[in-house]
Structures are given as structure tokens and as C-alpha cells.
Length: 199
Image (tube, rainbow, N blue to C red; front, side, top):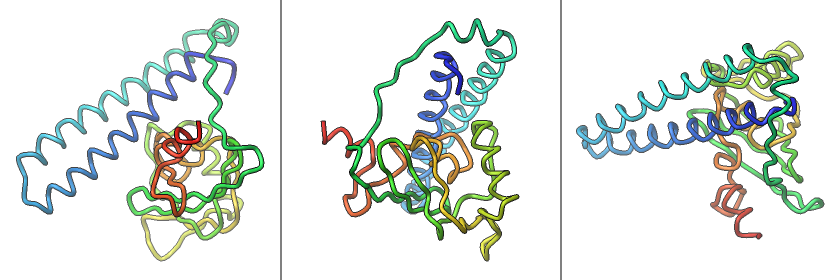
């Protein structure tokens, strides 16, 4: 991404909304099992409004890029706190999203999705353009291939990403927050929670 603080802020907003939307849908599924359909209806209504809001943010992001030249956009800055593990420490991560399931290695900010993982075949409008292109390139190169489940694609060779969120979006097919979605293997906590405990 260019040095564009507003663009970065849009991405962070979209990631957080995507993760909350997923949590609402998972809560609704649990309530269905309890036959609490009134609560399910309320949650689904909130989820739909959240999805609509996410599309509005995406439209504003597009307008920002199309309406202003790179020089103007480059005047805006955002300096996020670096989300890193100890430089030499290898963390093993897992992630589930809908039917997708992935394992990855994390060193610093870099997350490498391992072969044998499965990503969602369908992609959604909230997915960042760079990650969408990465998905298309991976299919052309045979890194992502069809499998027995028509909803999924299998990762045939490791794929490295420069951030947890880019890797998580590659798996989910939509905008999500990597630190929230990746779980530290064997710890039962998210990467975000694990990082907070290290500080």
C-alpha cells in the first residue's frame, strides 16, 4: 500500500467490521441450536446492517482513491504500532473461517500459509484488491487448486504474506482482521491476545 493514511484507516475499519460480522453470524448459529429464534432474528438484522455499512465504507475508500491524486493522498499519514513477535521466534498459527481451515507460520509480521490448508473459494466485495489479485495469481500458478469440497480451494505450496491480515483475508475471501482471526496453536488464544500478553 502507498503511504496513504486514509487508505490504511479504511483497511483497518473494513477488517474490524468483517471480523465482528463473522462473530455475529457464529452467535446466530449457536442460538439456532437453542431454538432462540427471536434473538437470531435480531442478530441477523444487526449483521445485515453491518454488511451494508461495510459496503458503504468500501465505496468511500474507492471514492477516496479515484477523487484524489496520489500526491494528495500521500500527504496523509498513519503510523500503526508494529504488530510483531520477537524477531527470531516462530509462532504456529491456525485459522478457521466458515468451512476454510488453515495453518501458518509467523515470524515478525510475516505469515506463511502452509501447504495442505484450505481457503474459501468464494470471494466478496470487501476483499482488498491486492489480496484478490494474489488469489487469482495463486490459482493460475497452481498454488490454489480445486478439491473435493466445492466451497474450498486447497493450498498446494506455502504462500508468504507481509501481514497477518493479508494472510487471513487470503483464507477468508473477505476483509477480516488477521490478529483477531489467527489463533496461536496450542494456546487457545488469538494472535492479538497473545501479543498483548507479551507486552
